[in-house]
Length: 611
Image (cartoon, rainbow, N blue to C red):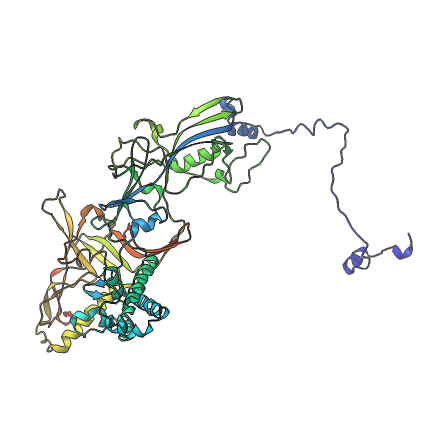
C-alpha cells in the first residue's frame, strides 16, 4: 500500500475527519454450519406448559370445530322520536334541532325576587343592546326617554332595602347603573308580555312609533335566541327536586313511550329512560324504517388482549396477569374471564344510527367458514325468569319487573360537550336528627350582580345590616345584674331554611316536608320580628306566585340520610347545526351527610355573652 494511504492512527483520523472517504460497516449475519436446514425449520418448543396454555387460550380443549363468522346480514327496525312531553305539560312535536339537555332542563330567568329587581347583569346587557339597536335604526335621540321610562333607581335605605345596602358589591353595581343606563330587563318583560316598545314614550314623529315597535320585537328575538328558556318550568318537579319528561317513538304495535321520571340533570344518556307510561296520544307518525344490511364481522381488539395467533407475543400494555382480584370481586373476575378466555369469540358488526332514534334488532343471519348459516335473535327477549333476559343497553320496564324490556338501543339527542358556568344557586337538603327536622342550607345564593355568593356571607351581612338599623334608633340595653341569663332559643344562621314534617290533608303520604321560615329576632327592635325569606329560587318555590303565594312541600323520601345537593347554573353547548344554546339548568346530586344547625332551647348562658 502506498505510504500516503497508510493510516497509523485510525481513531484520530475518524475524529478529526482527515480522510472523508473512510467508511466503516458493522454487519451481523448468520453463518450456517450445516448444509441441512431441517432442525432450523422445526420451530421447536421446549416449554410444554406454554404449549398447553396456548391451546387452552384458543379453545382447543373444548374440541369444538366451530367456524369463524365471515358474513352477517342484520335486520334492524329503527324509528325516530316524534313527540315530547314535559311533566304534566302538553304533548308537543319533538324538535331534533335542539339538544335534549336544553329541552328538558331549561328554566325561566327570574327577573325579580321578593318584588325586588334581580339579574342586573342581564338587565344591563339588554340595556346596552337596546341603545345600539336604537342607534342602528337612527333613533338615538330616544335613549334619554327610555332611560327615564325604564330607570335604575336606588331605593331608600331602610329595612326593605337590605338586598342593596347590606352587601357592598350589590350597592356598588346598583349605584353605578342608577341614572346612567336603561333597565333592559323591564323593557324585555314589557314587550314579551304583549306590550309595545313605544308605550309611554313621547314620539317626535308618529312614524317613529312603528319603527320603535319593530326594534323592540327584534330585541326580544335576539334575547330569546341568546338564552333558551321555556314558557313555563314544566319539566322541573319541585316536590321531587328533579326533572320528569317523556318522549315517544312509533312502532308496529303502537306508540312506545320512553319516560325519564327521575332525571337529576347533567347528561341525558340512555339509562335515564324507562319504557313505561301511557301513550302520549295524538296522531301516530308511521316513521319506522326497516333496514337489512350486509357486513363482514371484525374481531374485537383491545390493548393487552391475548394474541390468537400461535407464534405471536402479547404487547403487555395491559397486564391482566398482574390483576389480583378477590374471590368476591365478581366484576374483575368477569372482566378477566372475558379478556383471557372469550376475547377471541367476540366480533363487531358496525351500524351507524342517527341521534333521537330507537333501534331494535330483529335478528342476524351469520355465515361461518364452513358455509353454515345461523339465525341469531337478540339477547334479552326471553321470559323474566330466564337469566338470558339481561342485555347491555336494554331499557327496563320501570318499577314493574314483569314488563318486558326494549331489546334495542335508544340514542337520545344528547350534546357531545357541555360547558357549565359557576353555580349561582346551591341548596343542600340535610337532616338534623337533634332538631328532628330537615334544613335547606342555601350555600350559594344569587346576588344583584347575577353571580352567586356564599349564603353564609350574605346571611351575616343581612343580619348585621338590620342590627345596625335597630341600634341606630334604639336606646342602649340595660346591663345584666346577674352573672347568667336565660336564653329561650339559640340563633340559627339565616341561610338555614327549615322544613318541618307535616301531614297534608287528602294525601296518601304519611309525612311530607313543608317549607317554613324562622323569625329574625334582634334585641331592642320595636317592630314585630320579620320572617327570614329564602334567597334561592330552588327553595323560594311558590313565594313569588301571583296573586297568592303557595306552600311548598318536598316528599320526605327525597331527602335521605346523606342529604341531597341541588345546584343551578348556566349551561352552554353547540349543536350539530352549529347553533349555540345557553340555558339555566338544575342538577341534583348526593349530599354530604347529616348536619346540625346548633338550634337549642331553654339554655343558661353567661350574661356577658348574651346578645
